[in-house]
Length: 391
Image (tube, rainbow, N blue to C red):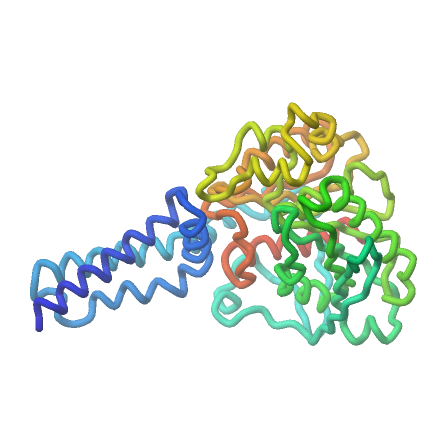
């Protein structure tokens, strides 16, 4: 019986040790990328599991001792992202740009602002917010397809209070899938703190290639402006926010306007140079990025070079580009961090206000866990950025 338990301890510890390596090494497949995402952002919750290898009896055999030490190593790796995040934020606030370093985020008596990038009680218990309502409205019809916006608002906004700034959220999904609920926790958080948050749906490739999605986002913005009074929205104070493919659309619409109502743009791990993305593809076992770009843009760069140029936000950076917040994980296997690095360098050349949040431990989609290290740090910056550019 003891030999059997020792073997279980060894296998259990070895399994967790192997999985925990995904917090520091590149995921070779899409399944392991999902595992890496979970391990890096939920690791502090998972760390107690491999510590079970230290239950009484671990010293009684060689296999038991090896299993226990493997479990300890796994627990340390699982805690590493949170520890790295805590060390990372120690460089603040001096590293923040002046244009939003001292911005006071919006808050209400029942929905307070975050006081620090990482708060232990928030990691464990979550961030509290007042009640927010969500409703869906159709903003356009394309053929037989109804395009909708999901509006997040507080009861006070619905009751006709003074107009407030708007955050227009554009979801990701490789320009092929709908998931307007992917940022629901952030949407509710921001709405509870005094913004009208509008999550925009758009047409998908390959049936509707570029520029269909871009044009839909523009039409959604026009719709929101036209109905601003109905929604308690200030049509002159808008910020675009997008993840991944949605980040590309947010950047493109914000940069290629111009629209003075758009005060800023937030991009989370988005491609900014489509040709560069095609020339530097991701591991096809994780994501066939070339096939996705061809479906979205109607071919490869040799076939439709002008489309690749027109769809690349980096090509539209100028002396009037709006303030920009870039958030990207260094370990991103789907959209390489070089995309945001290159865009940040271009913004520096143009002398435009921006901040590039480079998260050393994080992979693609890191903010999917709103109460994880990436979710907390990015939210802390996002709400300060919004306050700075809409005041």
